Amino acid sequence: MTSVNRKWYSGMATQEDWWAVYLGLFFFFLGLLSIAGVDLVGWAVYPTKWVFNVPEGGKGAISHAFYALGSKYSLTAKAFYKSLGWWSIIWTYVIFTIATCIGAASMKWDLKRFFIGWTIIYFLTIATWFIGHHAFFAANKTNWHQYGLNFALSLGGGASFILALIFGLIIGNFFKGFANYLSVAAKPEWYIKTAIVFLGVKVGYLPIKAAATSAKMGQQMASLTGHLFLAGAVATIVAYLIFWPGIYLIARKMFKLPRKTAAVLGSGISICGVSAAVATGGAVRAKPVVSIMVSALVVVWAVIELVVLPGFFTHIWPGTADPLVAGSAMGMAVKTDGADAAAGDLLDEFMRNKVTAETNGAVVWPEGVITTSAVMTKVWIDMFIGLWAFVLAMIWVYKIDRRPGETVQASEVWHRFPKFVLGYFAAWFIYLGIFFANGAGAPEGMHVLKAAKAGAVPVEKGFRKLFFMLTFMSLGIITDFSKLAEAKFGRMVWVYFVALFCFIIPVAIIIAYLFHHGMQIPNIAGQVAAG
Amino acid sequence: METAMDVVITHDGRNWVIENDRLRLASPTLDELDVELARLMRARGMVKKGQVAKVFMGFDNATIPEWMRPFAQHYFNRVVEVRG
Image (cartoon, rainbow over all chains, first blue to last red; front, side, top):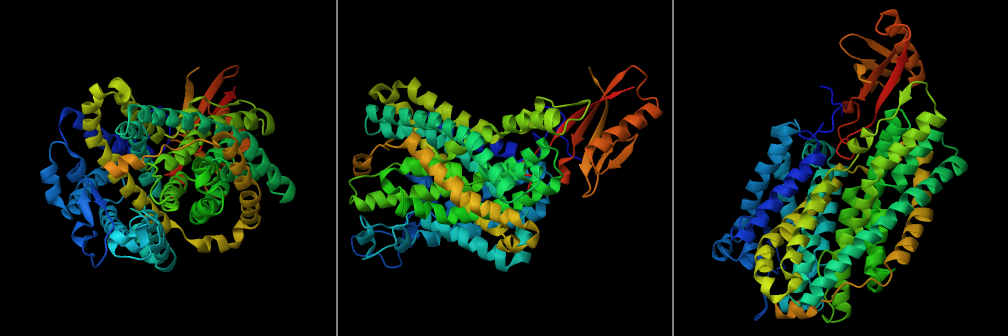
């Protein structure tokens, strides 16, 4: 069956990009109903730290290792959600299985295989989430004594991400038959794009959360997310006008690659990975195999970056002195939305735990701000790929490979536009609108903001984290490092290596420093202590 | 100007291929493909002397491997004007 993007609405029922919007916004709207006093998302499962032997007066009982977020945040059904406990795993499974299977059926995937694969991946993810929240991995020195420990790795939720990636990579590289079977449901791009729509809820909710401390802090947070939005635009200029020409020249002059291959590789390495490689391949009318080879390289290198960069940025440079520089640099350096958002969230966990440990709990950063800085940068880059490919197509079709009679249509820009960002911005701006429409943290509007919080937290915390976990696991499952050893990539592997470590990452850090240096994340230590 | 004809374009590893229910053409380069298309349309009277016919070529995204499609759902569409 053919699949051609002929009309503006082509693919709305069959593309993952659109289904990330549907899935994300459906649960976003369910959450929004809390403002009307109806809590339909409180069943969202969430893990907490645990130990085998709880010390006297301490905490961490296994029986409480999973809970429904509504048990903490619901205003209308707290008792019911409290009764779910571990059963919230099953509630979350059933509801998301129905939702994802509807999407899979609409996208005409093998539904039986998707269902089985999804089920296996979901429960593997939950098991990994559980292991990763053992206090030895997740606690830090401000609270490890509460779990009866004298030492812990202080990785926070990051441990779960790392373990999910490791388990996924083991399956993907040592159990290839099993990985192939799971591949129908191992969809990191779908999961991460859905998670990014949930992240939109997070960005809009951050001022509401901060307003619990003071109206001023709520407004500071709204201002910070606005600044991140504008600063992220700079990344677009960097990616398109500095990275792309640089990589193109490296590929052409140093490695003598053909013009079209250099253009596709330049986009893959410098802009947004596979989507850029495909868009550019199409724009310059390259044979699809060129984009396919570049894309295979991109996904493997992106996972290597995901493993290396969060730790590097946290412990070597810039560290907790400039967390938003690190987040933004991540957005510019890591290709593919999945790897970037995952790396951003890992960085968020590492940085927050480090600063809390370094200051003995005197400084606590709200979750998600650093992730936002990484994703905001990437979203900007993503949005312009259609325009960039359009410009390249004009140059190629009208100048370089001029063919009489061929024209480039403006509709190409829309066909290449990443649709999931529509969901991200809708979720963000609606929650931001709720914040400002209800006094921006003023006492008279706080009851509405509290009601909004009850529906926002399960989405921005529970669903978002779950989908990040699914992304890490799926990324591992579909990543086969043996692809790098395949000789046919030839010089492209080395172009990628040289370009990434000698050009992209250093320049990304410099640019991020120039535009994000000094931006401060509000300290919510007082709020945490009180609450 | 309305398009006179829609075709689906793919790449089979060696050739660019265009087809619909009335024609099928394959050529290693797009240049040669366009020349072949113009020749065939003139020969079949699909474009008259002095006329210009627009041909819409929609890329079949099923050509892109399934694992890549989630990252990018569009390769390219092109419109070619054929003069009679």
